[in-house]
Image: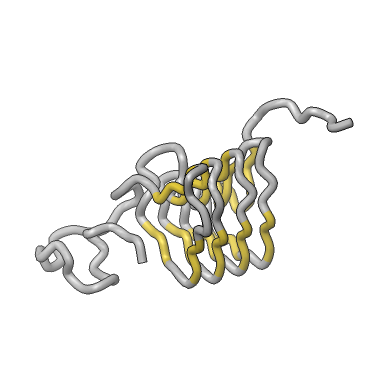
Length: 136
């Protein structure tokens, strides 16, 4: 699990302040997969309370990623941001993200199936603006 140090539901009172603090969206930035990331897999993980940027709490930025059987929630931006990448996303739940469940640029071509979308700012995939060029 990747979460805030204020999230006492994961691992107990990790910041040793009893009930003195609560987790919040944007407690930390992101997990980023770049062009030098290879063989990257997130399977059966939970990622929450990140997104302290406009890039999502999990950002696939020209890298590889297989994301499956996981939960991405409580981001202050998108749960998943995709740029110039083609990740595989299966059986993943996106919940309570302030932004979109997933956002991406027009260069990306992800394979997404079996996802669940619950209480996100946008319960869907948001595409960046731009021009689609005909291949031909």
